Length: 334
Ligand code: GDP
Image (cartoon, rainbow, N blue to C red; front, side, top):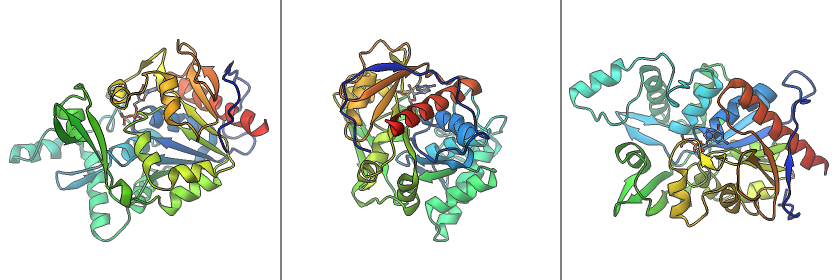
């Protein structure tokens, strides 16, 4: 659905009357996500619409390391959907051990990117599956199936895309920037290696075409959502969908919850606000949901809705998902 272009206004969402999964037939949702904000919304959305959820996930963070293929964002989303995520740490699997990783490090393997034992199992399986000629999409589907997930976790492309960051005058892989540099130094450039050759999978295009509501999760707009929208064909597919497109701002009370979103927004010359994020989605979103305590003026040119968007508990994740669904229904009916 094209952006409405209606005057900016800010409407409070009252979503208490929305029934969770199990009431009337749920709408089919395609959600674009990175690893943290988008993944938490995916968990809330799964509680609302069950397996009528497709999560299209960034693979620009992927890295080959320790003999395995690590796919940080798709796995993080998968662990959130499976209820296995270590919520305190914000990544990895709760109550897992690091025995294999520690033993490998003792042998001299690189130890800057740690993987717990069950996390390693998924990455080892993925590497093996793809070495046999399988697709990344099918490997992720098998991992999701193995963990009992009904919703689909769809890598944005089967072709490799690798996000690289220029900082302190040096280009590095994204994980090296985030972990070795602590994701704290000024970002001087962002590059998506392989993006021109990447294609959206038929599953991704199908999910967008069949969606009754398309959601852009509150993930880092530059390095999590940016690579998904940069895959040739994905923006166009969203634009030509008849479904409403709703973004959730990653700014809560005017600040990011976690991670270097501000550094990346500054690097591309956009304001570190919900309005700055909305400007990146111009032409594809119909509305943005901003945090109720966000002091920013609403993004101009698109409709803005407000509700508390901090997803720190099961109930708050469900409440944000209900708010998104309510805005979607409102847009579809208007
Ligand atoms: P990463 O791949 O782990 O960096 O994760 P993402 O790109 O998905 O998430 C980083 C963004 O998520 C940051 O901009 C955060 O502000 C945002 N975020 C994290 N938790 C929440 C939340 O509970 N609510 C909202 N609105 N945004 C969040």
